[in-house]
Image 1 (spheres, rainbow, N blue to C red):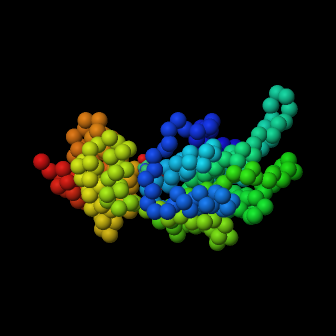
Image 2: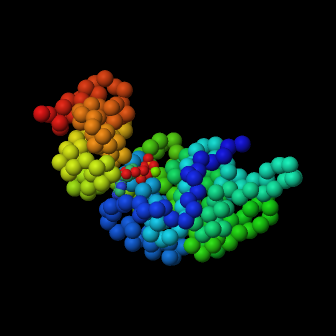
Image 3: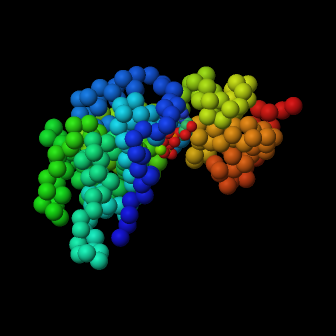
Length: 273
Ligand SMILES: Nc1ncnc2c1ncn2[C@@H]1O[C@H](COP(=O)(O)OP(=O)(O)OP(=O)(O)O)[C@@H](O)[C@H]1O
Ligand SMILES: [Mg+2]
């Protein structure tokens, strides 16, 4: 039996507003989708702010957030719930999707393409105007609480040829595109999240952009804002910038000696003394 990996349930609001620097009108669009009972799909590469955006929106809208990391063993029962046998007999236990539907939470399914199609179809009736969740095993049909909202994310580049969402699923969502932000904004994020000063944040972001260009030379995974932040945190904590970048920025990206050599040269140039 596979339990879905789920973040600890948040009771009420996080203490502080999760910091999110918008790229455009995504906050307003999401708020309107929430009001209009429209499900939302966030598309974009790893580490570009999708999860942070959902955390921020849940806070803004004053809703609990229930996150489910999708994987190919995830079953419909993992989402909806199941009967468990205990000392006192059999009892029904809601899955995270069912809890979100009852509580009127934001339910965020991360990397939804990883889930099998027979799992994903459970979401379909929730995206219709009636917003229903049939619990086949109990015979109940739940109507979603008014402020329930479904949010899914996926990374369009990743394993694109192997996995994709079916049109019947895709067309049930309003899609918001995410990407790495312009340099000025990415530097502001890096600085805010790590505590490094603006000069170091800009140097890291400039380096990140040069590394992203190596995609044309065979670098399969380009560095995300997340990796820039990890490097910045090490620097803020006293690690010499070039060592921090080698460990936190370039080593995670590749094992190829030629590519690593080229990336190391760029690091040396970015933080030359
Ligand atoms: N616009 C932004 N505002 C604030 N923080 C951001 C922003 N974009 C990225 N970040 C920072 O980058 C980190 C990584 O972003 P996040 O975890 O949201 O990525 P993701 O798109 O969900 O990636 P994945 O697809 O791997 O789950 C965040 O923890 C946050 O520190
Ligand atoms: Mg995420």
